[in-house]
Amino acid sequence: MLLLALDTATPAVTVALHDADGDRTLAASHQVDARRHGELLLPAVDRVLTEAGHVLRDVSGIVVGVGPGPYTGLRVGLATAEVFGSALGIPVHGLCTLDGIAYASGLDVPFVVATDARRKEVYWARYADARTRLDEPGVERPAALPDEVTRLPAVGAGAVLYEDVFQGVRKDLPAEQSAPALARLAAEKLARGEDFPPPRPLYLRRPDAQVPASYKVVTPK
Image (cartoon, rainbow, N blue to C red; front, side, top):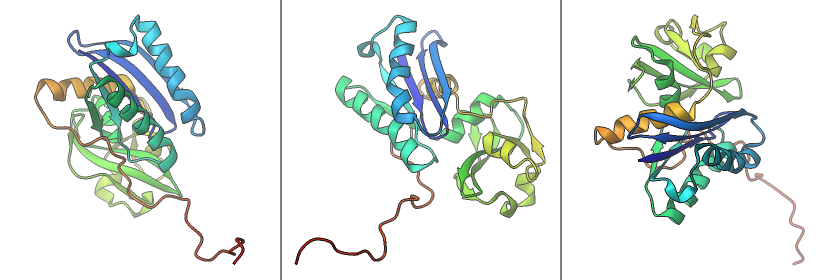
């Protein structure tokens, strides 16, 4: 089973082709650019498939990070995954982006994952270990998080950004999302027959762009 994994919910545009039967990543691409998700994603998919010696129709399933993440970047990955799934007639499996970062950490003790949510906030969730999330993801100013959260080992770009608040930042562990980790986590869940969240964006707040409360009508009466 070949799984194509991708995630654009963070500044990282990350793609991987994973052989679930052989438990190995065949090729991967990782670029960090918060403003070029739409420009970078499809060339990355093409590059990964070419490097692995496969074409898109060889893929058995799509794995996509559903966030939480900023509105525009997040939708680039989800829309691409949906198009691939529909065109190929294959399943699209959603996974929480924070779960992928947690899985990549490999930690077997309680910890917290935090990513940059902008507006001086972080998206965060607590984990019992690399595979077990304890609660639903949230968005909060780091200083407003409970002490029992900020004292935990902390993983992710949000933790690094606010290391004055998170007391146990693990800079030795990956801070960005990893498509190979997301694919391996999905392969494990598939092997166990577990359910996946739908491939829909996980928004925890309203988008930055808003319709003006009042505006001047310029069309003729």
